[in-house]
Length: 402
Image 1 (cartoon, one colour):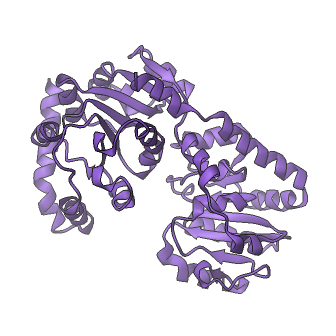
Image 2 (image 1 turned 120 degrees about the vertical axis):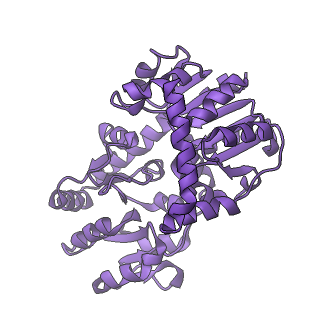
Image 3 (image 1 turned 90 degrees about the vertical axis):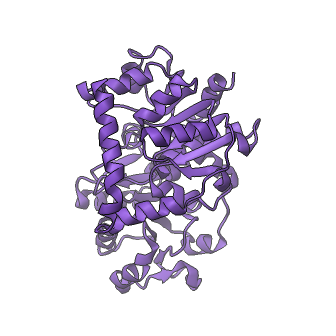
């Protein structure tokens, strides 16, 4: 009870302060204004409520959404986000009419939400738990499920301060984990805990069937090996330049920056290697570097990658490594990957390589360029692993749709 009182006071106080903080903080001001202008689906009871903290959790939710849409209309589904990175990404997409920001977790907002949508079943992705939304929903007969749960023993929820949340998840209908360790941790608190795997592998597997072919990239790659620097930041780009300075044989490169507004800067930094913009369409087999200055292509372009250097691993925000893995690729990333269990999986299965020594990484690339058999072996480990991890969504559906 004391926790609940303290929690409600804190959340209400934050909600009260936000407009004043917004006067001095552009980020907070944007947080408030984007929510005020965002879509709000019309009032109606919904059967399935899917909550995603951000874009990463949304990628985990998409296979489940697609599975639900096989037997239900979109009007039966509500998708909520807390972070703008998720909402802004899909606000104009096929699910836009059923997408909204999750209000701040005040009792007033929570009661209004349930009065408006009255969800029958709620799916929380990974571990973005909001105390009032869950407790109030459980009291009002909403059934809760955890999707893609993944926890380490030192996670907040297992600490003394996390006990109120453990009490909540004890009442979840099912907890579905993406790894065996999490299953062992959670089954002590909820016997309806099951290890089913990671739904993201179902998500990327669909790319194999739907991905477009790019004749210009085929021509660009020609007979060479291709390194794609995906969702890159400055550190990955600097490392790529260091690799180029060693004159690797038979290698071409695509740089896909995390922020395409940095394209001019990247072109300038690599000017010694005559980089070309993708949208200029003036590159060919003689070009060694292409900078991808458009969005929406990267996951499909990985089909041509022999090597993938994934951005974000040098500052603890590793981007998606499952996208290149499904096609079969040698995958490398910076050393700060500890919050990303898929990176551990890639390392354990022989196709993921953390960058702890830059010169050593460069030597590895050179050696693999000369050893096609070994490179193909690593690429096969990658694609085989993704195939072995599929079907998590079907397993989950077997429980929730009964």
